[in-house]
Image (cartoon, rainbow, N blue to C red; front, top):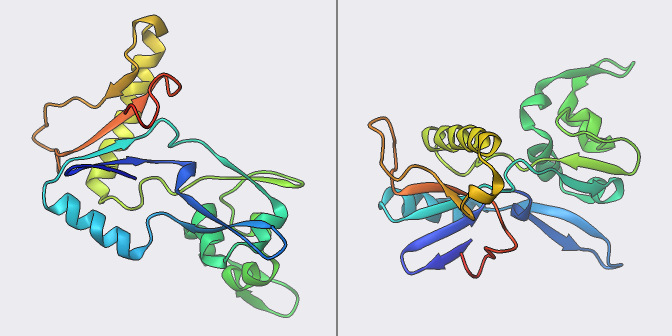
Length: 195
């Protein structure tokens, strides 16, 4: 997240994963941005009508995580990255049924969560899509991604701007029109500092 005066710029996607290193220099995902206190500040920022630009060019990207990094991650982080909605399943292990969440806490393989892909040593996970925004605003972001995909499919690259922005004219159904979405089509030419 960057601040320019009253405006905030947030980059959605893999950069939201916080990593930590253990004593032996072993890395593990440790959290997902924003933490609870920052979520409250972002909600206040949105409620106040202050400008917010959310850059979505990496929103759909997966994050490769080594299996040992995944197993060192705290349970809430694994659940969030893999899709916590799948945790209500019940498993039978011969000794009777127990919640899948309990099983996952002890064994921690990605398959228990059902929301990540990969076999062997590398697991592909996704950051929860804009889970820090209110649902109506998140729906606008998803619609913008779909519309921008269509624009990219029908427009030659040479005719596209370096930054594709959501239509600036607020629609009657829009909530929080001061929240805008963008995709950097040329991230190398339009670096974070230049943005």
